[in-house]
Amino acid sequence: MEGTKVYIEFKDIFTIMIKRKRILFAVVITALIASIFYRIQLMKPVYEARASVIIGNALEFEETQFKIDDIVHIQNYMQTYVMLLKTNVVAEKTIDTLNLDISVGEFKNRIQGVPQPKTQFMEIKVKWDNSDQAKVVLDTITEIFIQEAHRIYPAYKIKILEKVGPYTIDTLSNVLFYLVSFIISLLAAISIVLIVEYFDDTIASEEDVEKLLNLPVLGSIPKYKKSENDILNLIKRNEYSSSDFVWAFRTNFLFQSRKLGIQSIVVTSPRHQEGKTTIASILAISLAQGGKKTLLIDCDLRSPSIHDIFSLNGVGLSNFLIGNSDLIDAIYGSKFRNLYLMPAGFSTLHPVELISSNGMRSLLTNMKEKFDYIIIDTPPVGLFTEAQVLSQLTDGCLMVVSAKESDRKMSLKAVKLIQYAEGRILGALLNKSADSK
Image 1 (tube, rainbow, N blue to C red):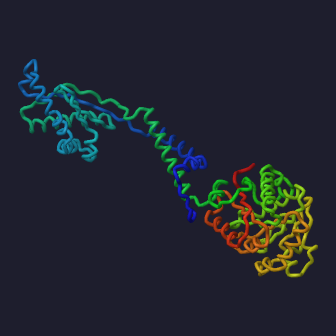
Image 2: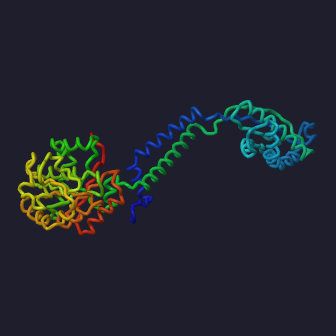
Image 3: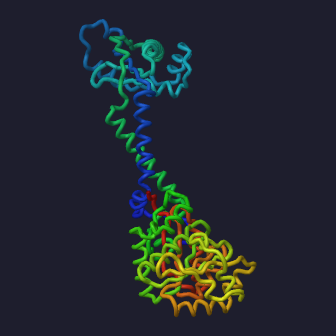
């Protein structure tokens, strides 16, 4: 696949329908409700009036029994009389006589001539949306038709035998109407779903991550309905990191890290507000709770937040790297057993230089001897270069993307940036994948 567009194949349609089932059901149900309302409240009744006429010569009408040859002769002309009924001349004269506000084409669509097989009889039918007008139109067009027929074929006479109606007719039965409505609604819903899918440039599911980014999904964290501050408070109270989906994420992470020999890992994301810092904190806490001595380092010197999450003040990484503090002063214990923290420290004008320094490289090497795992929070790789630099100094990288928020193009760019730096991506975590309580 080139770029970020999704080229939908027929075999993928069913999968797309399942993924977008809410849209599918919403469109179908809305369309059906609209069709029911239209059928009951807005659809105008159609009235039909018809006249039966007989066609023959003057002598035939005076005789008590027609000759077979004469009947056959008349039948040969029946289609001609039908065509005469549908001519513009008859339509225009009727419209002008009644002063109707209707086009000739529409008027002709409401008129029908039906010859009866093996007889001299013909039915003239008029369909109208007004009962009184249907009768008037039938009377007028029948009269004008007889006049025009006599002018063209004076030897033949036309007599009106009876007139019936007007009466209401169903152009479609209820069953057929609602069946057609359902089919149209379903086709419309499928079309809308496919359009939404084609133009949707966000990552929505684990399948999208695996297909678009070609990365294994280590876990999915549901979208929390509360604010970010509420989530951070839950982390502090150890109520968020103990959830089942967090333990599943930790299990997958441990499996991958052992298989690949990973001890230090960079947690990053394509852009801001993906939840990478929250995920890094949750991962660090869950590893520590599993008995792993873990160090969480805040390498996002541009917009640090680890110190806010864990209520830390004072020196940190930047102070240590520029030589203003000892390592023992930059690392803090926490309320969680086995979890240690190194906040970002004081702000600096040159974060990339500090992160790419020999001091940072030495720090990571020394920390590997003291900790089982080192979790590093970084700025978004799609915006800044720190994650690329650190991917060269660490064992692997975890990419955090947000469901229905992360842009496909930027996410793919983020993956390629790590790969260009020859960093190893351990996998991806899909954040905000579904609403939680």
